[in-house]
Image 1 (cartoon, helix red, strand yellow):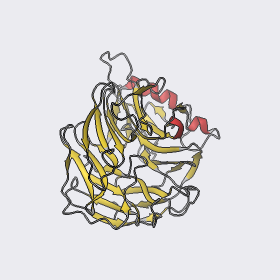
Image 2 (cartoon, helix red, strand yellow):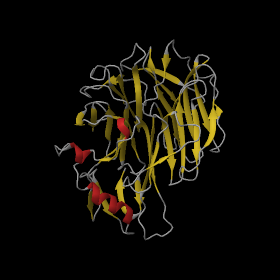
Image 3 (tube, one colour):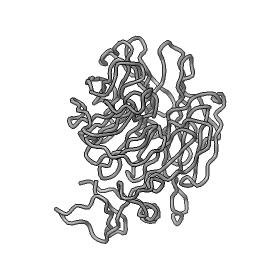
Image 4 (cartoon, one colour):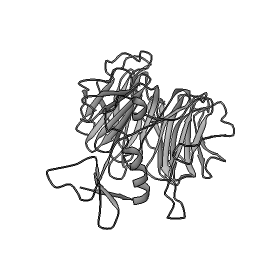
Length: 392
């Protein structure tokens, strides 16, 4: 068992808010499960990232700094847990479709746009979005960025649709310069196979140190590519997720231990519930369809504390507590992307109309650690040093 410790005051303040709401489906009012933080912006948001700021005064509780991005060149930032928002300007990106974000602290973020003929770009800010520096773009035929993920402030990966017959991954080790990873040990892409850029989660990092990479494909096939060595060598496995046309396939995947969960379907037929979710219990080697739900196309998935998996899509949100085998509908917001912060208790999602929402979970604070054989996955306990501790 690994313990996770954090600032007592900061976590207590967040938990006092979370304690108002049920863990799964205890309340009928979905506005309590998924309270909306902001909306009304002319943008279809498809990327969200957040991190705590670090006040120099230790008496001041850290606040969550949230970034969101989408179509029409929109980039939003909230420095105070979603209470207030500012629209940021990216010079030269006023008409771009931003679909990838990775933020650190309150001032640094990577921003990815999609498109052809040089519209697929990677920007970076180190001053809270006041200025953005273009780090990478490419005008080659087929180059189309789909997702960007980071395992540290300077160590990030991005993926593109096939170029010259194989998927292309970019990597930076210094946070400034991006290089292509070798592709000799990657299986060739199938004709009309691609990666979807709907939620910045078709590529994901796994493993204790983020050394493993998974990405999901769609179009002619719905496959999962897996690298155990940071992109040097790859394997590919077929999945039962819907595929066979340009609008269907895997749109998002996440992992936890040996479990990997993928969601997708056909975005042009969002109410079709055939082949929209699958799971693997052997590190992505073999796959099975979910036994029940979700009730339609889903574009984003992530996993929160206690093994609670959250899926989002244009027709609503769903929860699974058994590694994606069964899903229960929780709300009906039109959301595209979801992310779980490293604390595993904060779940944010974004969608159409500039919508940003937070999924609220309930946790219980106890004075003593649960006894063996009597687990309490929703519990935090106060350790001898005054820190809040929870199992993981």
